[in-house]
Amino acid sequence: MTNTMLKCGAENGAEVVLELRDIVKEYGRGKSLFRALNGVNLKIHTGEFVSIMGPSGSGKSTMLHFLGFLDMPTSGDALIYGTPMSKLTKDHLAEIRNEKIGFVFQSFNLAPTLSVSKNVELPLIIAEREAGNRRKKVEELLTSVGLLQKWDSLPSQLSGGERQRAAIARALAMEPEIILADEPTGNLDSASGKHVMDVLHDLWKRQGKTVVIVTHEPVVAAYAKRTIYIRDGKVEKDTEQPGRKAGADELKVKELKVRK
Image (cartoon, rainbow, N blue to C red; front, side):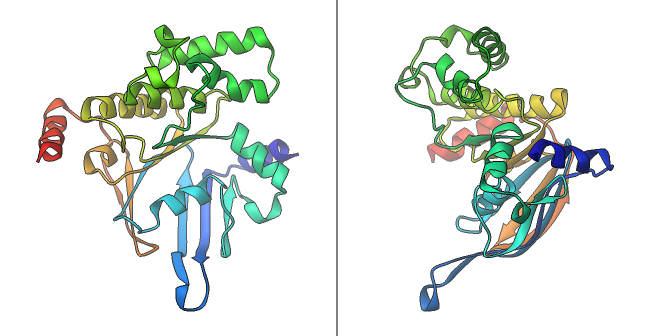
């Protein structure tokens, strides 16, 4: 049912894949009430690469959670291909998250006791895909992120950059149309961060994925074609830019800042 609903929206010519309408998110009550998002409106089009920037506590990660249907708003609604979140059951929402959206988190979220290949295979196992097809798909994904030689390695045996690339491979297992990444370079050194961002950039440029990232680093945000600035739970600015990979000189500047 979910796939049919979403497919109908796309066939009617809708170019907006994700939308937030008047999203308000509040925590607590009374004097302790905190409004994380305050009337946010946003549209993400199919095939866009968008970065979301803002100071700590501005609401950027909360915004990403609504784009990924991970939370319910206090008021307002989130839509995917024109279908409102409020009109979908919990099962339909879970189906969307599993099949339409790939999540990449700063903390990697890899199962520590599973090998790299099993971590990537996990969504396919849950979806009850045939074993032979699963192995072929995992081989393709690990090759695409340069980790085929780490097939039997545990996450603890990987570098930070390798773990994040494994997380990206897992996010792609169900061939989602949308990739949402929350501070994907936050725990990485400059070289590893560039490798991870180059992978995300190629997913957008070569495969036409819709990519949305949250970041506090201008060098990372520059990969996107569009940057949305959020402050105090509101969209402050929405700008377009060329969208390019970081150069070696920019990475050196970042490393110098870290050393200071």
